Amino acid sequence: MSSVSYPFIYECSACPDGLTVTREDARGLYPDPDSPNAPEVVLQERGWMKGPDENLYCPDCGKAAGR
Ligand SMILES: [Zn+2]
Image (cartoon, rainbow, N blue to C red):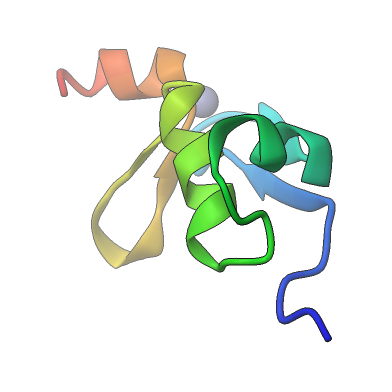
């Protein structure tokens, strides 16, 4: 039984950009794609970052925010 259901769809808090993380993406970057950590690792690998209040920023908006 899996606690993680793919695909994960993330949306940037500052622009209409989005990112879809599939099980294949997660498996390529994380040994256990069923771990709740796996999609977050993919997210970081793609340059996305978390801000305060669970906001999520795409690479462009993250850069614009100076982080
Ligand atoms: Zn953005």
